[in-house]
Length: 152
Image (tube, rainbow, N blue to C red; front, top):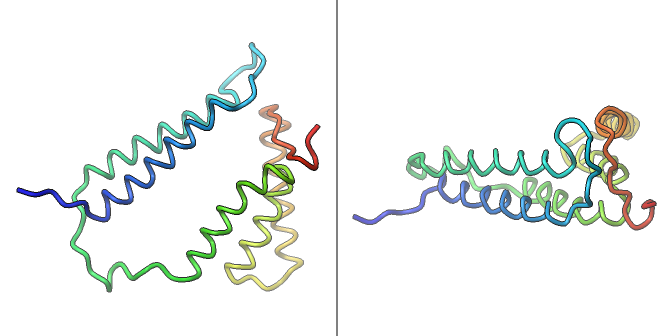
């Protein structure tokens, strides 16, 4: 009896690889001072990576449905453009910093999703970026990467 990898198994392998790569990247994070309460800047991403890996294992164990092009159409051009924007956003964080990259990413992706009103895009982008900054910098007291241009 031969075993064939279906869509569930291929997706699970992809998610698992991302989780392993992201977990490995946490070894390069700056040290966090001892005594800070809660999950730190290293533990939280590692926890998310472990949850992703666990979900990938569960997906891998699920039997894949038979391929039906009408049920699962091919991935369209727009989806690939969004994926490319995600790939560009990560190294952009190293250059312009996390906060600026988030604001720019939200602006660009909102436009790619079809929103044409630039004032609305700007308000949503800046509002979401401010909320992220408030939660992670002010409440969790984390230092977000400033990048080459805005790093301290």
